[in-house]
Image 1 (tube, helix red, strand yellow):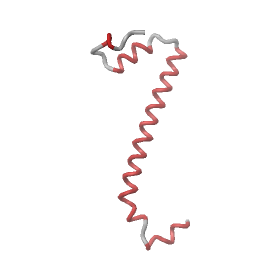
Image 2 (image 1 turned 180 degrees about the horizontal axis):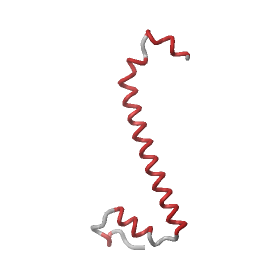
Image 3 (image 1 turned 180 degrees about the vertical axis):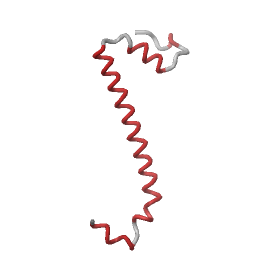
Image 4 (image 1 turned 45 degrees about the horizontal axis):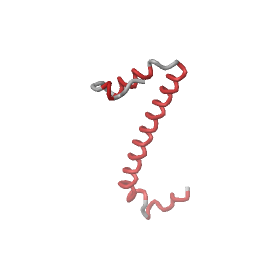
Amino acid sequence: MASIDAEAGMSIADLVYEQVKTLPDQLAREVLDFVGYLRERQERREWRNLAEAQAGSLAPVWDNAEDEVWNDV
């Protein structure tokens, strides 16, 4: 395995590519699946952060006496 220090100046994506292109297809597919998992996890985190930010600002709209009738629906 090539040393990452020896590859100074290369981007992380280039370093990953250099490592993955030497793998058998089955292992390369696992790496690709893992990358997909990481992307989905990041997207879920971003949506969760957005929802939390919205919840705080919308709480006064959602929690009021006029809308009390809708709480049990």
